[in-house]
Length: 276
Figure: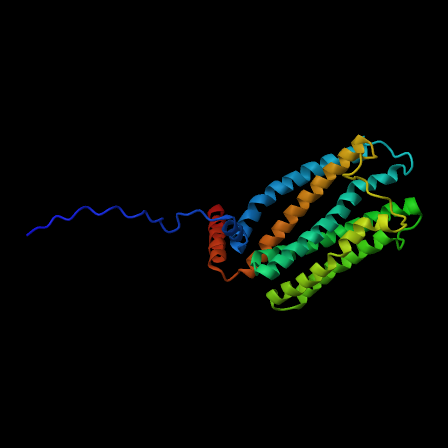
């Protein structure tokens, strides 16, 4: 005997596995993976280099050939078009390095620690450039290559902090432990950054105050300001390109045993073979 059963009510539709969109934390963590960081950096580097080349050349042209001569310092003031952006970058990169190093330590995200390691050499370069151009500027202005001024001394300490972070990272064979040791020094050294910035306000120093301030109108000619801002954008873009290119190299070294690195090498070999 056949019994007719009533049609069953449709069951609630179950979401297909993997159909839901990742939330912002999952998206961020996916970018924090070395593989995604390597790919993203590769897309940014060419654009950053193009911006760096164009804006730096434009800024140097405006600064050296368009901006007028300063009535007090003469032609010597033109060093600001390199000195000021380099000094800004030396502090900004240090804060960024400490942030990513701490993030990699606390959250154990490998790409964050690698980015902190990639930032250190570029930050040290701009710190040295700020000190060197400051010496070139100080000789005709103060009559000496170096004075133990509060800002100069704290900037020199910043260079030593960069060197210390890199030395700690390189001296320890285990990369994870090296990253942690460097992160500890980087985070502790952050206290030096506000000292650099506010030193001209806290103490009676030879160093002049801020060339550009958000709290007041600029005191320099518009062409001077334009040239300095263009150079700032150019050096920032160069820093981005240099750091990300170094990050790509660090990722490949750290992840050399990963399957995706082997696949990347095979693709590169295939392309070279096709060109031959």
